[in-house]
Amino acid sequence: MEAMAELTIPTRETLKQADPDRYRAALMADAKRRDDLLILYAFHYELSKVPDVTSEPMLGQIRYEWWREAIDEIYSGGEVRRHEISTPLTELLRRADVPRFWMDRLIDGRARDLDPQAFADMDEAKSYARQTSGQLMQIAVKVAGGEPDEAVLEAGQAWGLTGLARSYGYYHDRILQNLTFKDLLETTRQTYESAKVEVAAEVFPAIIYAALIPKFLARMERAAFDPIDDKVAYGPLSKQVRLMIAGLRGRI
Image (cartoon, rainbow, N blue to C red; front, side, top):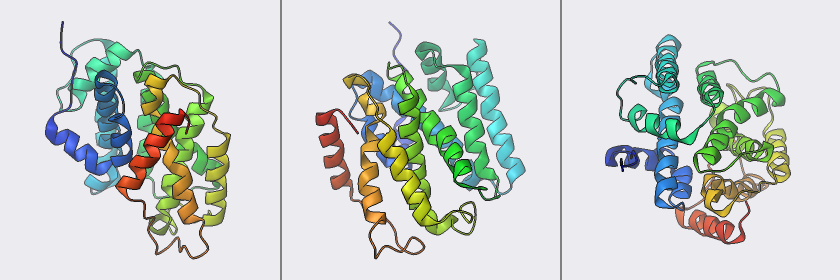
């Protein structure tokens, strides 16, 4: 039997540093689902880092187009360009039956990061969070063997909004300049609390990191918290305990 594709050790270490919460959650899965989730998250990291490794938007668009073409090759069933991520991703997507348009939507969502224009309103910020973090969580649940529903998208959207709130100091005069920090926090909490996700225990690692949202919000809701200058302190050990508790309870 052919061995399942895996990430190289250097790639895993890079992902561990770049996306520690999803990485930590994936390690709670069994071996097969763990490797599949890590491959997916490594692909997402390749998309998310594009604005940071390109000097101008046009070069970033070229990178995103490269990935669109790679996805097209994967779903067309032919030969796929070689890359440390595209190679294991090919085996994964051809086996997991992930809908093609989910992958396209994720790439398009991440390509929005190249646009410096501010979100017009909260609805646009929510749409962005849904198309990026929400879409990624939907794909992750499918990869882990589940059938994601609207609640999964909503939980992922809440994670994306949490990320925007945590980065408010950096983005407040950029893409978030039309949004107040207070409104962003309130919207994030409402989105999280309305996401009543029910998935099988073996699929839970694909969503469990969303259990960290309440603690992130609690820290940012403190009266003394300055969203421009303060960073959200949440240690790895505290996160691990939170994830273990969520795993035992079976809910985020």
